Length: 394
Ligand SMILES: Cc1cc2nc3c(=O)[nH]c(=O)nc-3n(C[C@H](O)[C@H](O)[C@H](O)COP(=O)(O)O)c2cc1C
Ligand code: SF4
Ligand code: SF4
Ligand code: SF4
Image (cartoon, rainbow, N blue to C red; front, side, top):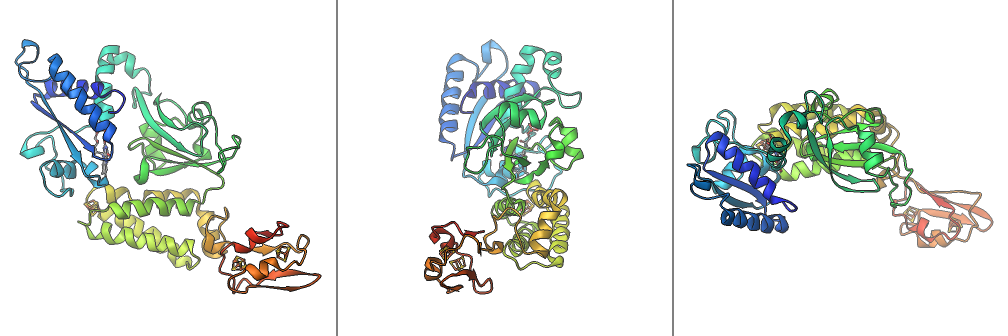
C-alpha cells in the first residue's frame, strides 16, 4: 500500500469484475499515514486514467473505490468486525454463518481479501497462472511476503517462493542471527515467532522446513500476516509468550467471557511464572486454560491467542520447568528470578557494593570476600554496576 498501491487497486478492480461488484473498500489503519496518502493518490490517478468510475473504458462495468480509515483495533482485521467498523458500528466480530460472501457489508455479498492477495492477482495473470504456481510447492503455490525482524542482521519485507526454508530466510536473506547488541552475526538461533501475536514458534528442528501452509499446519504454527520474529539464545521464551499474550489480552474486544477473562488469567499465570510464584499447578492451569480459550472463543483472535503459550510449552517445556521448579531463568532475562552473586576470588573487600545496596543485603569485612543475603536482596542490580572489579555476576 505504501510502495505500490496501484497493484492493490488493480487486483481489486479485477476481483470486482470477476464477482460483479461495483464498489471496493480498502480498510486501512489511520496510524499508517503514508499508506493512506499513497492510496488516495493512486485512487485519484486511477480515476483520472479511467481505470475507476462509470462504464470503464466504454464497457458496462462500473467500479468505485472507497478508503476507510480504521482507528487501529487489531480485532477490526477480523472480517465481520471489519465490516461492522465500515458500517459505523463498534468493531466486534459476529458469528458465522452468514459468511461475508452470502451476507456481508451493508447486507450485500462481499469478497474480503488481504492486500497481498489482491496485489498478487495481476502479477499471476500477467505471468500466467502456471508460471506463477510453479514457484511454490504443490499446495502452496506462488510467493509469500514476510516481515523479517528480531535478532537478524538484515530486517525488512521480503518476498520468497513458498518452497523457501527458514534457514534460507534467516541466513541467506537475513544475514544470520545477531546477539542483543546487534554486533555478533554468528549468534545462535533459538526460535522464530511466525504469524504475529496469534502465531506459534518454530525452533532449530524446523530450520530446513519450507514455510508452506501444510508444513506449518503440521507443526502447529501458521503464516498469518507473515510476521517472522527471529530470536537468539539470549531470549526468554516465557517472556516472549507473555509479550504476545499481553497484546492479545489488550486487543480482546470483550464480547466472549473466555477470551476476555481467559487471556487475563493466562497473563496472570505467566506473571506468576516470571516472578517466581508458580507451582506445578500453575503450568497445568495455564495449559488447561489455553485449550478452553482456544475452543470457547468466537473469533480468530481468541481462538489463536493461546498459540504462543501452547507452542512455547511444546518446544521449551524445560524453560518453563526451570522457572517454576528451580526458580531460575536460564537466559537471565527474568529479573525476579535472577541471583546476584559475589565471586569470592574477584572480590577485593572494598565495601563499595555494601554501601550502595539500598536494602543492606551485602555484608563482609576487610580481607574477607563480601556476600549477598539472597533473602534480603531485591535484585535491583545496583551492586553489579557499582563494583569496579567485576566481582558481582548475575
Ligand atoms: C483478530 C484478527 C485480525 C486480523 N487482522 C488482519 C489484518 O490486519 N490484515 C489482514 O489482511 N487480515 C487480517 N485478518 C484476517 C482477515 O480477517 C481475513 O481472513 C483475511 O484478510 C482474508 O484474506 P486472504 O484470504 O486473502 O488471506 C485478521 C483476522 C483476525 C481473526
Ligand atoms: S474471541 Fe475475543 S476478540 Fe473475538 S469476539 Fe470473542 S472476545 Fe472478542
Ligand atoms: S564492590 Fe566488588 S570488590 Fe568491592 S566488596 Fe563489593 S564485590 Fe567486593
Ligand atoms: S542487587 Fe540490589 S538489593 Fe541485591 S545485593 Fe545488589 S544492590 Fe543489594
